Image 1 (cartoon, rainbow, N blue to C red):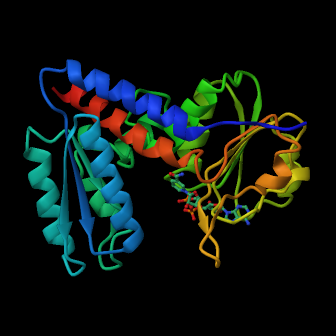
Image 2: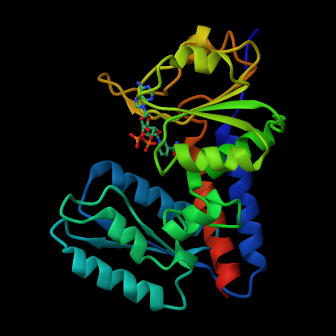
Length: 279
Ligand code: NAD
């Protein structure tokens, strides 16, 4: 068996085009502000691509760059200003923040209606309760990839590998909402291989290169690889040994070109959703 490759670039392109079409019909331009504190090189790259993608979709995007020494109080004041600005529909504070700033405090300062990352406890809670919420972009993107690939989810067993608030936990809530029987695995899970072998769908978000081996995958299972790991030689690897997995899975996402492109596309969609709700 050779797995079908799920092309995240194509699905993301189509979603971005749909968002742009939708924005073009609106009587206003949705506004997105990305706040970047410090000059972490990876964050700087992400923020630039978010800016570019938003502009291409017709969203009024701007980035506020603050020095690494910015105090927590100053950042809170900045966010309060954005909360009060009627032209701003979405606020995203790029993580990680410098260590002297408490990320959770900052996340909780963002108006939940403008929380396009879906990290505010109100949105986290609503999602956990199965209520409408602004949903974190990466797991939202995974659900869209599964839908686009026509993967039947209802009644199936999924293994979510990783329990972070950004990926694993919201991923499990979304799958549960799709009537999936969800198992969550993490660094203390006793027999990860056995847990994987039971799954019809594996979503790997552990941040460990090639952790999931080919023979851990049930024949025909769907494998979504969220992991993005930079190897010593500069190349990128997912959390799944792709070359092995392709001989076992029914469908699989590559790294890069799988989940990655979906995250920004979902951010654009969240910005439009936030704008429509608030206005
Ligand atoms: P994290 O470090 O916050 O969480 C990792 C989780 O994996 C933890 O819950 C931990 O318990 C679990 N884990 C770690 N090692 C394990 C092991 N050996 N066995 C079982 N479980 C283990 O990471 P995160 O922010 O959730 O990100 C996970 C990965 O996804 C990273 O590679 C990150 O770069 C990537 N990521 C990609 C996107 C995207 O847009 N595609 C977005 C966010 C994160």
